[in-house]
Amino acid sequence: MMTSHFCQIAVVSLVLLLGAQQANVRAQLAPPAKEIPLYEGDAPGSEHWTWTEITAGAPSKPIVQNVVHPELMYYPADKSSAVGTAMIVAPGGGFRQLMMSYEGVDIARRLNEMGVDAFVLKYRLRYTDPHARPATTQASATTRAAVSTTEQTGPQAGQDLHALAGADGQQAIRLLREHAAEYGFAPDRIGIIGFSAGGAVVIRSAIGPPDSRPNFAVAIYPAEANGNPPPEGAPPMFIAVAADDRSVGYQGPMDLFSAWRKANIPVELHIFQSGGHGFAKKGGGADHFMDRVEEWMKVNGYLTKPG
Image (cartoon, rainbow, N blue to C red):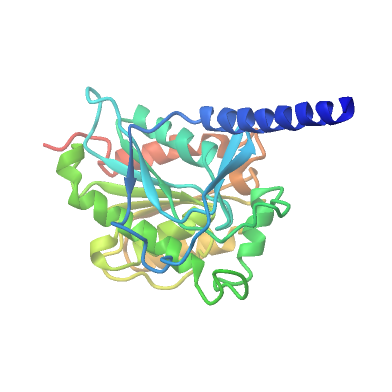
């Protein structure tokens, strides 16, 4: 009887501990001013997804998995310093998870310091079995995701998850452009920055239908970078990657730069000597990539108040 009593206490303690850990993960992220659904009702293509979004990861690096209902998390700049520019932030994570801190909310806060209204994009992802062992690193997740864009098995079999994520990026731009006056920025000053898989979302948005293209784009160690000619009217682009990135490499970003240059579209490329994927290797120029982004945005007029 005593042993059973202790087991019950242990189970209750474990449940409380797990709940506290989840709360701690959520507490690490500054709450958005508003959460904005991308679609009315179910997102096209995922009407039959029935699973629940998961918040997990270490408290210092929270992640989100199994996004079914994509949304924007709104982080406004202080109105006294706002410059009338908005930027969507697309975290990376190999299309299986979203790195919500250093590729999400942290970037939004940095943009706020620049006077830019930020919207962190939670785009749709590959299904992750909550009972399976999670990916240990973002790079390993990205490598697995690069094998195929179309799911071969599981509840998303036959679906192109990269295309769905790209569609979410395009829809986010349409939505912000439609409601620009409501949020106080100009409809022709909407950008998007993305990391790794989020960089693929950036590229798909930049070459998508004209009404869903950003006015400027920032691709940081982007997946799916290539030298395909951009369509007429593609936006200016900033690209950054590390020379020692063993996940996406630097050749794709170089080809992307060359394609934009050949099309006479403004473009800037930084290949940092070190930094690795995710710019996780500290001590080099990649540590300050957002300073370079800020300079580029300033040169192109996106940090000057219109009028």
